[in-house]
Image (cartoon, rainbow, N blue to C red):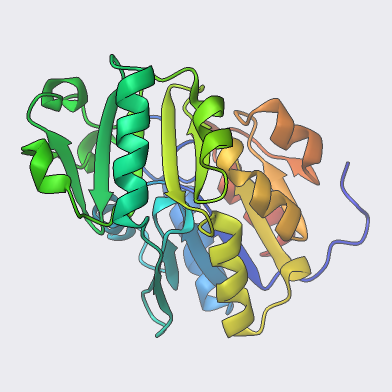
Length: 271
């Protein structure tokens, strides 16, 4: 249900897959126009995604009006037109303990490291990651290295595939890392314990002097739940998980049916 009194929107937070991008990984012309109109109206645009910076920057060539990019689920803040920057890597000791834990309990799972803007896979595990990501033309390519080269590295994010027992890991390492399962539970993403989309966006809003109640956020997956709690006007895509739809102020159309453009036109670009 939509409240009859929608607060004036001063900022919009969007993700890539399932929201800004259609399933063919393109941005519709209608969405591009809506985003440009928002930027011209002084609306702060923030892109918050699990994707790495290299994939994010490729998308932003098509939609350059975002002031901030928040890759890796909030582990990085990149001010595109603003000076604010942040990086929260996992300590190398924690990364090594995590990798050893997973190797012992789930030896058939696949682990890789994102370090700032480079994706590392081990030579023994490279083939398992060869299909890259769901970003199509924007897909980042992994760099294969010997596992010993990752010793002492501070990973920005650790990715794990084929690890259904991830809640066990999340509980065991709850004091040191933040664990998310996305893509239907098939991809486990491990980050610094203080890293999240909502924490990064909250820091941006504070720096910009924007109250969270004046923020519209569109979400579709579990890593958007925190943003739905933070922002005053949460919008679930038609293709969103049920937990987001239950918390949304409104449910818009799907990512393939101009869901973002429709909600911006109705609630931001009015009058």
